[in-house]
Length: 446
Picture 1 (spheres, rainbow, N blue to C red):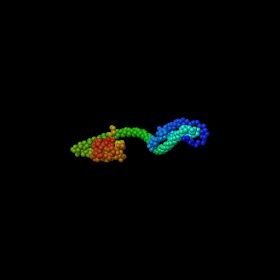
Picture 2: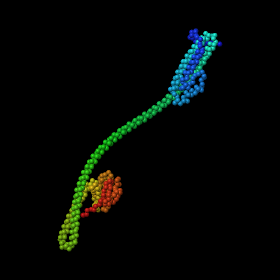
Picture 3: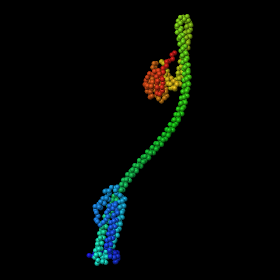
């Protein structure tokens, strides 16, 4: 049955005047080659999107579902989504779809041209049934290709829409992640800036303190050097003064010792004369027989004797006065004794003797002698190891008692620390770090 031609398109009437005979087999071969080339162009995105080449078979829903699951962001971890690759693939798909659309338009135009040629051929060869059947088959094949291409294009549009939605979701997640990361970075930056500011402030304070300490240290060093120089000068001066005073004291003590020796010799001479007078008195008493005969001579002799005795007593008193003056001079020369020593009036003389080299310093003890660093002490020792009121010595008629007045460094007798003890002649007394020897001497008899 001859095929009814469609209404010819306006503008094609002139082109159908003389048309060559349509080579249907060549046209189908060209369509087959175009179909193969068309399907090959969809092989490229397989690596990233998992698409299968388009063929004449119907689309497998299971494979499409698997591919959509592979592109589903919920089924893939954020680390597995390659945004760059997905964007590139989407752009490649859009380019291919645009090319396929252009190709489809070209095919529609070719189909329209073929239809026009077919209509013209039918008009020229209505008697050829075989050609009509071939043309009808070609038209049906072209319609099938067009329908198949439209289905493929619709599937590709749906896939592109799905990929675009996936890309939008991935972009949104990426933007949210970038916002979170930026917020964290801003917070960490603020914390780091605050910490750096605190450290800079602390560093500035430490540098100021270090400079102040260095300045104080330098000032202290200068002060120490000044004090050392002053102490050295003062020590030299004191050493010279001490040496001069020691030489002066030694000279004056030697002079006083010479005077004391002369006084002792005079006293011994007077005692010898007094002893001779006593012998004479005994001789006069023994000569009782001559007493009556020589009463006048005896009375005269007694008168002379009394006068001589009074003279001797006067000389003895003068000697004792000179001896007292010599003793007071010695005490004034001693740097640790007071000028107003209250000497014991009864019993033998008690004294503390301090030896310094070959020189002995004698301190005569009063009834109550205070020893310490304070000016109120009778025996004043100006030393750091001596307390202000260190000890006291009580001299009685018979015994002499040494008592520690709660001193810091203590009082020692014969190497043993004591609180209160009776002294004996020859005891070694240590007060602080100063050593003495306690001595007892008989009083001078008149």
